[in-house]
Image (cartoon, rainbow, N blue to C red; front, side, top):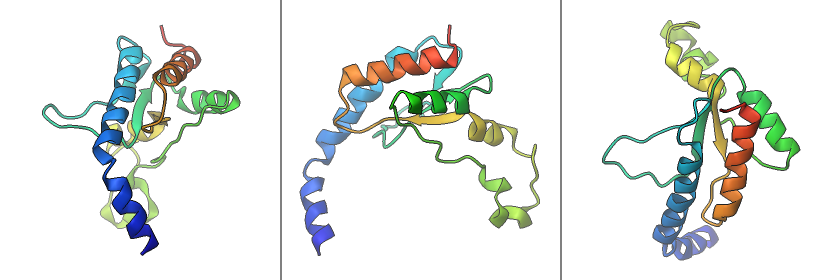
Length: 139
């Protein structure tokens, strides 16, 4: 009952918070535009993202080093899917092995989720993006 009461209040703010996350995502998008080493993941045309997460793909095998260096600067980030589903023990009977789905495997090695919430200030998002670009060695 308590959770329902809290969520019923939060639901009245959902659209406002989704719009705020879209503004933060737009800051990140501008900062990463043109980078060859940090690529923002894109949604399908015609869809609306609410940016529960803001995921970037960090190339040249630098994802884990960038994440560690961000943590040293007090910037949180997350790797939500470090192993693709087809390589997880629960999927062992599916018959896939490493190399079967190379794009999924690359994403598991390269995707990093950056801070994203409706209260993130655009200046803070810019600082995060600049740190990611610097640490990734982006040109």
